[in-house]
Length: 414
Image 1 (tube, rainbow, N blue to C red):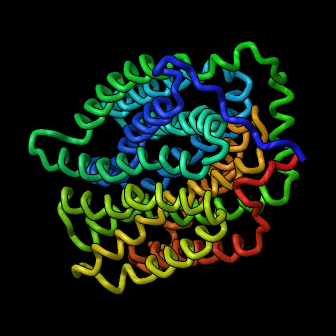
Image 2 (cartoon, rainbow, N blue to C red):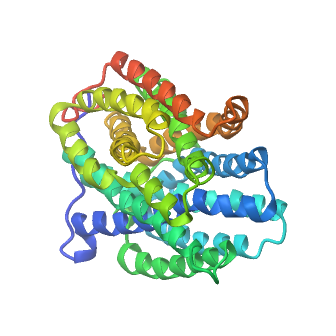
């Protein structure tokens, strides 16, 4: 057994303070998720403008997933190897958002949109790797809470993303292309903020002897031999596939089946994506205090039950608390799975572990948009994805029950 990882030493400069770093990372994470959660609603307009069917729409979601998974798998070891340059990597993520949004805005054909969406997936996925590693190193004693606070920032973006996209689409003189240009401008502004606040992140590792890049990839293979880590990755996989189905197709359910306006659909969709503002810090704190499993298992059972009743409540007022209840567990539980994986990882391999968690989920989940599309076609209903997601979430709960998770404050195994 090795000793628990000590917290990174505090820096008297405000930019080296761990609370300031967590806050800055959370702000950037929030804007990144605002872009991400506005995207599915914008896709409904792209599909209408270009005359896309469900299969072609699924291609957009699938290439986004493919680029994300490749970035996570390859970027994890690379991020740990380049740990002295985390601030520069994070700045590059925001600049990458700006370039790819502008590229989508000027795309003349569906094929060009597909290519641009593929590259759009890279900066958002890459952001998680240095940020999760930096947080894990600075808050080893409150890892679940700190990861959830980083997620709190993302949940602000999850709430505002659909609402902002829906509101902008409701402005008569704006089309989806204009909105991507607006996003590009916001990303440039955020790149300046990240450069100012986080450009020194990781420099404390500059004088520490590290492993070669080949050794970092070998570390990834070592993590894959840990049965608990693999079980957590499997649980995250099933949950992730279900969540992707909900996030990708709920805007279509709201707009096509329930015939909501873009603003109304965006507001309802925000309940699904953003209620973690309320739940993420609380569930993260509870997982640190009572254990990860004590939060994950009942949370997954509750999420599965809520997903199963979405269609039955239809467009009644009951849809509001049901979607809000689903939103309480959407991202918050996934963040606790991240903390559970980091409980088993030593210093210097955090980004590799998070890269594996997101990357493996992404690789296997590439087919999920097509499977969800086939289910929609088979049942001739966008509502079928809620049952699909509910079943996958129920399986996730059963798997987590069987995983022998260690206590968060126990020493990490060698």
